[in-house]
Image (cartoon, rainbow, N blue to C red; front, side, top):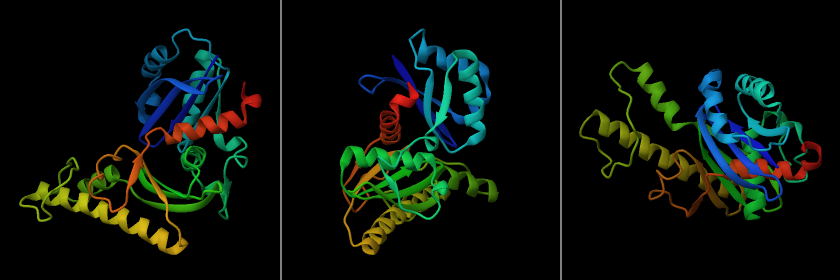
Length: 258
């Protein structure tokens, strides 16, 4: 028996086919989250993913976009008789404790990241997730989620600047060896690359100074590799930490979900 586990983000949605008895990922599909509106595209993607395999009747997802979650939920219910459940509906306190005033304000993806890093690393961690937003989440070695920081995402910032300034083109971000750009694109790349390096380094240092602790740094998301030579601290790239956290939540709720 296999189960669908996924992460619905503002930009990208990742859906995995996971073997229930081993909880190992067997297959992964990615799609632009806006494509969830296309039944034709979803049918094509799910045909590759499921392909006649015996599937658990309940799927477990994290989601930060309720409208996409609703559409996808209706799709898999209609065509595969599978009920989509969101991780906030399930017990997570046996995995991580949420130590903030309003637990409902913590995004499901950040809860999944916290569960994933605690179960995998069992040490004080900062999870840096390069998504639509750039998020920093602090998880202690005792499995306590202490809160975090939300900064603008790289792509979102580029698109926002380009749409607001008539002379600024869309560009791809990459490392600039020299800080002073000799043309508009070089100047933009330098500003974004070194600006985000400064943001990352400074926030990590401030977290450690405020908490008087050292942390293992975990990078995940699309730009995890980009800054690897310019960050002052060692870090680990773990692209499946969100899915790993959802699998841990599934494990704790398995008897209710099978």
